[in-house]
Amino acid sequence: MARTKTDKAAGTPPASTATALRDGSRFPLRVGPTDRYLVDPDGKPFLINGDTAWSLIVTPTPEEAIKYLDDRQRRGVTAIIINLIEHCFSPDPPRTRSGLPPFTSVGDLSAPNDAYFDHAEWVIREAAKRGLLVLLAPAYLGYRAPVWQGYRNHAEGWYEEVLASGIETCEAYGRYLGRRFRDHANILWVMSGDRCPGDAREHVRAMVAGIQAEDMPGRLYTAHVHPECRAIEEYPDDPWLTVTQTYSYATVHRKLMIDYQEQPARPNILFESTYENDWNSTELQIRRQAYWAMLGGACGHFMGNTPLWIFSAGWEDQLSSPASRAMTHLRSLFDAYPWWDLIPDNDHVLVVDGIGEFTGMDYCGAAKTADGTLAMAYVPVPRTITLDMTRMADRRFRVHWFDPITGEHTPSTPHQASGRWGFTPPWDHDAVLVIEAEPATS
Image (cartoon, rainbow, N blue to C red; front, side):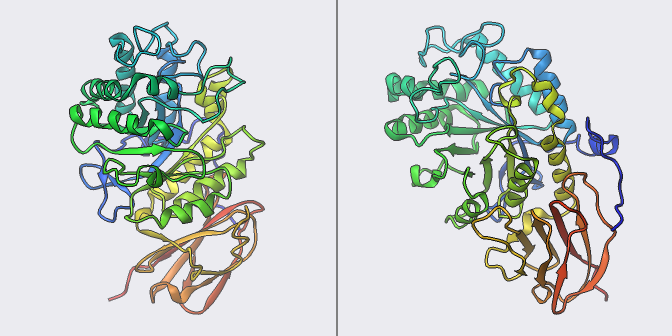
């Protein structure tokens, strides 16, 4: 089948795409009317097309940080994850590239170094200029293994220091952060940090209380707990937990389904899964995770890339990685449709054949709007899928395929919302089927 575009640039996106993605959204964000997504102050839904930049504050030079932020903005990234204070994954943790420590006494949360946090504020401010939401971890607790052997035997996070500091000091540290970052409207706080809090639960809560006492009202929070766990189970009655997340290295779409069922509903993000260049990951795997998230009820996703997230040797070459290019295309696709109205087809009433294995990597993720005027289906492995078109509105439809690798669309073809229809991707790789209603006739 013919394609409508031919651009396959391996570097920056086409100029027209880059320009279209430059305006960004305004902050602060709040929870949208269905409790499933975030909106800006004007009520515009905010799609989280995220990138992990954990070590952005400490490892790059200011010039390198600007290069990263400019590139991510051009590629349609809308959000980044950053560690406010780094414990492990930098050349000289916890110091910045210029030698600034976060505390004037090593590991002492009661002694914040103003010069360090001045630099951190600069990074947050530069992100805001580019329309980027910053998911900021104030004290990343770290994975529960005692050391991360690959990084000079540093403990991964601040768990021991948080415990040693005590609850009152954690609250005071939170108050300091609340005052420092009150005027930065593009922050969403990330509590815990790759760990269920365990004995540090009350310390985390105290830190949140401290931030809230000084911070702007209405600030959003999430919690990054251990893989396959759920933040709502670790902080079940905490009103500050306004955004949840899916964190899975297993069957990602299955975990997304479970998390979508949480009540009360909250905006959910695919916060972390397999990173590009890690764990023998493939290009397909990275794309698959993102599209499963967008069609599985999440309000966005984060892509990770090694060595980009730690800004180690070779990170600049990874700015134009296959996954980076693919996520630009993902943003352009969903920007064109009311993605926030899509409801996951978890009961398989729309896609009735060719679904794939529920526990497998060939699973066809699909969603449609409640009024049946829009549907999308992501097919990871080429095959025919059958849709029950009677589940759509009683209208004529235009149907086309979207290529997640190139961002190309096939010409659309007309279909009537009656009976069952089979659709086969035109390529030998993954594809997205888009079904949209034609305007109703009077």
